[in-house]
Length: 146
Image 1 (spheres, one colour):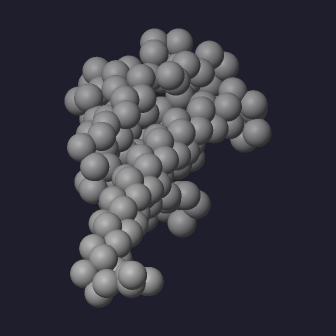
Image 2 (cartoon, one colour):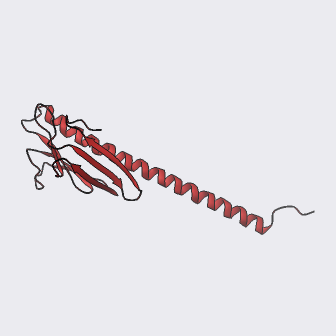
Image 3 (cartoon, one colour):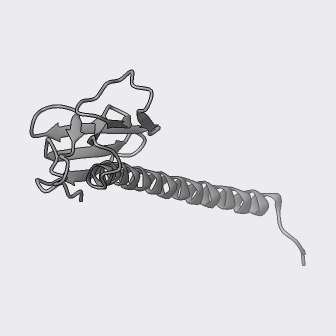
């Protein structure tokens, strides 16, 4: 009678454990990437809401807006977007692709003083370049963001 394991049994067990570890690692990576994509969409939505709130709060006597680029959002102050304004706050999102479909075919959304009505309505598709995942942010006529 022989006690212990053969080399073949040990190698098969090691192979199975390695495959299981690789599978679980890839699943965790996908989950992490999906959470990052969702987090980016929530942050972008929050930045748009913040620009609207700053306009409505009468913090200053001007309005605020957002400029949407392919992988960044810029919160700006004033009636139009000026890329060289030092007061602009730009937020860049890695591995994120932003696609705007606004009613005025622009990339800017400005909010009207007193009412918060946006200059353009429509959607911003937030896509993750590593995943085939897209989250859509909708800007409504009243300025609300979903």
